[in-house]
Image (cartoon, rainbow, N blue to C red):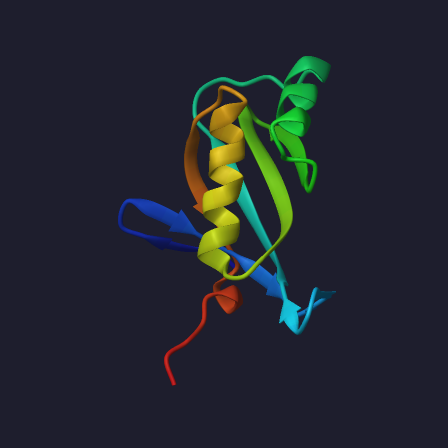
Length: 110
């Protein structure tokens, strides 16, 4: 279920899988979708550009003229995962319009 907040559509889902890396340090895998700005057509070149820019944990797709990338990114936090994915997309030469995340993924205050 997607939730829309003013100025940003957020609809993210997380998996609480915490693989071990190094001494006692763990990462969480976060699932979210980036919607790209403009009329981007999914071509082999676009997919290669995104992969080479670090989006190898994302699955690009296009539906009804909307280009999206579904990410399964490991990071220390949801914010870090999203920021790094946006930076990767930008380094490939594309702009992000919004982020979609399942509501259950957003931590709730205690």
